[in-house]
Image (cartoon, rainbow, N blue to C red):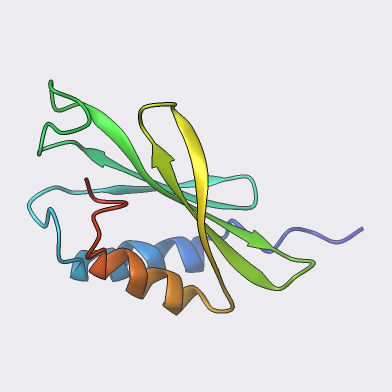
Length: 109
């Protein structure tokens, strides 16, 4: 039996450090939470676009597919309350670069 590689404390800390360099909503402090197979990022909704009361909203879900050796990046469709696959990447750094740039505001809404 093989133990899952994710979540683990090392990559959780790596994600926490990396998202400090994001271009959007730098004045909030997001949380990285361990979830089965990966990590979920949540944050206060300061823009009030998703939650008019400024509550905690989901930002991104990062899951590692061990069979494919790839990261799946999901964004939250707040209208349907469902996670939608955004992209697949070979390296975690690619996922973090995309999250930090987010020029289309798919994650940091």
